Amino acid sequence: MARYSQEFKEKIVQKMMPPNAQSIAQIHRDTGVSEPTLYNWRNQYKNAGRAVPADPSNPENWSAEDKLAVVIETACLNEQALSEYCRKKGLYVEQINRWKELALGGYEARGRLSANERRELKQTKKQKRQIEKELKRKEKALAETAALLVLSKKCNAICGGKRGRLISSENRQMAMKLIEEAMIAGARQVQACQLMGIDARTLRRWQKQLLASQEVRDQRKTAAADRVPANKLSETEKERIIEVCNLPEYKSLPPSQIVPMLADKGEYIASESSFYRILSAVNQVNRRGRAQRPKNSMKPKGYNATGPNQIWSWDITYLASTVRGTFYYLYLIEDIFSRKIVGWEIHERESAEHASQLIRKTCLAENIHQEGLVLHSDNGSPMKGATMLATLQKLGVVPSFSRPSVSDDNPFSESLFRTLKYTPSFPNQPFGGLDAAREWVHSFVEWYNHQHRHSAIRYVTPNQRHSGEEMTILEQRKEVYGAAKEKNPARWSGQIRNWNRIENVWLNPPKDVRAEAQKLALVA
Image (cartoon, rainbow, N blue to C red):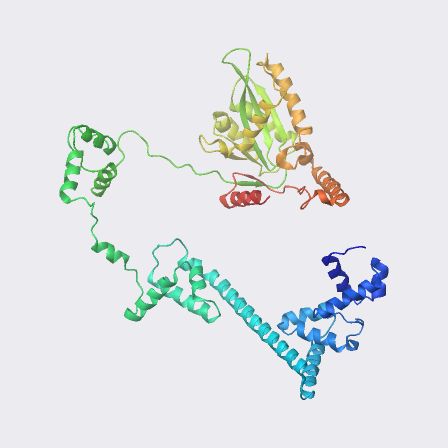
């Protein structure tokens, strides 16, 4: 005997109900379930209080039990939920209201009720009260949620921050006003205070201050001014620190050396930080000597590539030769959007002239005629030479440079050099000559551009992405994975692999873009 799950029964009974309104005979023909079983399921749901009419095609022909079941089901619904219920069931709100009036009129017309009827009526009234109570609770919770949502849009600018922070008198009064408005709209005081980032006791203290002095102010500063720290240095000790620092034997030394030297003599006055603080108070902490003040280098401007030949990254790396201490220099240019190596050359020395010639040849090979191409590099002398900069200006190329000693500012070239030198085909021995080095790099570039599936661009080759062929390839992969999932869905617990095209590639992205990318990576 076949056993059917509860979900299957739900779906079958749903077909009997409006607006589907399928007959039992039709469902029997479609599903193969016997008609007695279908009648049994319908009766079970009717006994449970569900409206499963015998004649679903015309609601006016429903039995009194079915109409009463509909009235009971809709008793706890508000207007919007009732409208949704009627649309799903193929009914009108007016029909349900008329059935409700008829049911109430029938109760009144019955006169005296039997004991069973009185018990049923009592039970129905009890259920109604419970439903109304639950409805009021839900309406109250909905009103509180709406009030807190409105409050959340205003509170960050007033009381946002950590506990113990200083809140001005104006912001305190505004916070009390907003909390009062939220409570009138239906929010609880505890929830509103928690959303504002304050404690309910703090709110009561503010209200008490406002009633007492018509002003809400922070008393911590006043209390701190009246309180003297136990470890505070005396005026004599402060004068002693200044005197010691200006003695001939310490006149050119910083406090970080003066304090240990005093300890070697068996004397302790104060800590190094206290020395610095006292000297700073009398304007005796200044930079001295030839040492320059530390400079904070600004992060280079971020650029967003949405297609090939918009942003290039280039650098120079060493290739060892058979002569110790002598290297060949590989000049290499990469398109960061497609990861394609668009230009390369090998020379025996570094120079801005070689770099400018490579840039000129690469622009011709890639048919670059419009201004706006960004060329990013580090701060090496070939990158910032006069010949190189003049060539970039002539070609309309925008130069971009990394910060000094920050390799992360040029990650694409660094990653490419790592791939080049760690590929299995990289020679174990130094290159025997310039031609041998050029021959090997030529084979590497051919492999990298046309065969290597790059992990950062959905495992297509750089040349396929550069030429626009990736869209067809990725769509084909989606179809293959979709067909495989449809054929054997048990192997997939979720969606198929993400084969969507990567639309944006950032060079030195801003903080918000980097944070969003990290968040997406965690979700994935």
